Amino acid sequence: MRLQNPFAALGSTGMDSQVLAVLSRSEQYLTIPAIHRLLPEEGSSTGARKALSRLVEQGVVLEQITGRTHSYALNREHLLADVILKIANSRRELTSLIQDVINSWPVKPVTATIFGSAARGEMRSDSDIDILIVMPDETPEGLDDELAGALASKVARWTGNDVRPLLYRAAEVKPAPIFDLIIKDGVDVAGDPAWLRRMARGHKVSP
Image (cartoon, rainbow, N blue to C red):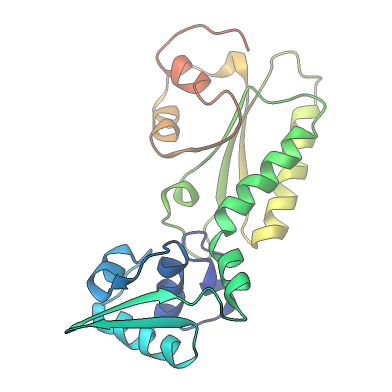
């Protein structure tokens, strides 16, 4: 599954899925150039135009013509609109599900962050989902591995992607390039979102 374009998981025509992803995230009518600029993956304006024609024919997309300008919006009254919007929000739903699991843990992480291609919106269908999990130093031996492993299994079932937890104890986190990359692109899901940034700057913070 590619979180930036979740419709592709259903086997839809590549450009159709991208156009739906764009229109689902806007309540405004958008022109073809605007839609093309917002495509989550590569594609041509010609491809976008053809996809829009197909989707308008099915009633999923509404077309508005003003002079020579054609603009398009998702038909939110369509029978499939709720399903389309749910698919479009897959990344947000995944984050929420991960948060629910972590909130049930007997020991909460200092911080937890999705990073890599899943955070940057550059996933391929075979991409891993990378999650940094930093646990308190006093976490019982083996519990952190057990919790992270169970979370990874759940996320893999939810998405179809392999999940790679990057697991640390708080005292193990020191300034390093990997943490700089996570800070730059990461999506915070639990704990203190500023903790890693402080540690990467060499500040000592109690977990």
